[in-house]
Image (cartoon, rainbow over all chains, first blue to last red; front, side, top):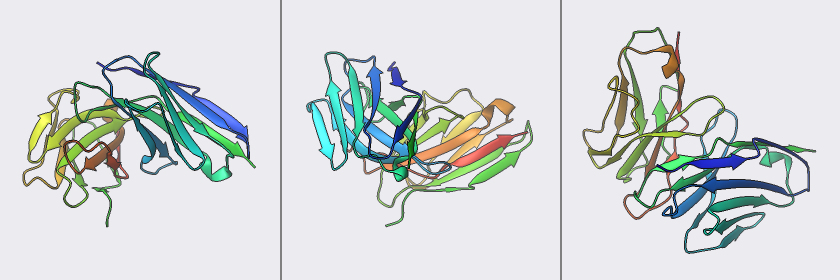
Length: 113
Length: 114
């Protein structure tokens, strides 16, 4: 089955700096890659996603890039703010299913004021 | 409209007991998923419903776990003879249906087995 690796496990940045979180996946048939933000004790919330026919997608301060050849995708957050502090999860949906998401282990992002 | 809701928010039980966890998906969503999230880990897939039927239960760890969705809306995850290793946050998600990618998560039920 699909395997998703996520790095780093923790990331600390100063307010205003950029943050980058990277994920790799194993199934070359995977076709959908969402990113979720989870604050302590709260539900995971989708922040951005990308499909395999697109190389990059941007939404205000957040962008995601996908390299299908290398089987990796990254989350980029620019001009970080303290409210960006949370755990971020990447996920991949295997091409063999229309539904099953395999998640990375998460990255704890801390934005210091 | 209302998002995915789950009850209870917290459940503490003793080893060997039976528990039921409930999920109310977003109205009209035909697809429903259960995931389990252990401390410091990402959610792990348990089971997927399309309508009333379990289309994929390959993530259920063993036969102590069972889930139903009798009317194609509310779902109940049932755990028999609970073990300490079952302690985790159980997350439910829903999506409008096939060919729709986004899964919307509920707040989860934190299960603690003493």
